Amino acid sequence: MGTPPLPLVAAIGDPAGVGPELFLKAWVARREKGLAPFALIGSLSLMQAVTDRCGGAVRAVDTPAAVADVFGEALPVIDLGPMADTPGKPSQEGARLALHALETAAGLTIDGKASALVTGPIAKAALQDIGFPHPGQTEFCAAACGVAADDAVMMLAGPSLRVVPITVHVPLADVPSLLSIDLIVRRVRIAAAALQRDFGLAAPRIAIAGLNPHAGEQGRLGDEDIAIIAPAVEALRAKGLDTTGPTPGDAMFHAEARATYDLAVCMYHDQALIPLKALDFDRGVNVTLGLPIIRTSPDHGTAFALAGTGRASAGPTIAALRMAADCAGRRAT
Image (cartoon, rainbow, N blue to C red):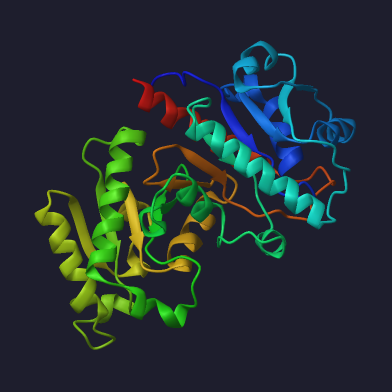
């Protein structure tokens, strides 16, 4: 992989959550973890208060172009205005800062002034209370890039496993009616192209899970595996992709099975995220595939109960920053 040609930008997330301290902890570990330079988009006054609690140093910069000169000595912060440090106490003011940071960081990346976007954890309900129209940051990033929501594919990735859920934040009862051959084929093709472009896999091997127990047992436990998933697998093979399935979900995630594929495609949220979090809980990264920009995020929420305690692990934040830099470096070569 190459070196990112420009710094990364990180949106602070909800300032009452763990995001501010985790980005600061990541900067403190920059040399040990080999992190590429990044700027935090947020509030300088808030981050100065966080340094009083957690150590480290911060310094204001005006643009990502100034990051390289500062990063060795302090975490560069593009300041969006004052914000009180109130860990664990979300507010509308904090939600507005989170949204402003997200919009600013995405704009800088889309405009080519940063190599990649890393987003801190947000409180979705708090954002929606101030008029945020999207289900989450993935959908916001898709809209900002002019990409249809269905073509922005969520991948969760860790050292042991990569997973893509075909359906995401929907009730389990709705999953069968949402699945289609076209949806599976479209999302797997987007994922395969991203694995080639951003992860250096020339011919990714993709395992596709069944929906029902035992992949339906030839229709005895449901016909979706026969009617939808199997034809999708065949269509993907016809397009030259190395795909297998539908495979029973309970047989896909032991070590010997994981060695046979580069990506597991699952039919619903928990089918994908339970094994990912069981294997890589402190190292999981949320990556949005199918965008013209690179966007990653630590695979956890705001953790308001941990905010301000110093106990939150920076592992996923460091992993998200490293993965963003790695992908940006590959795009630059």
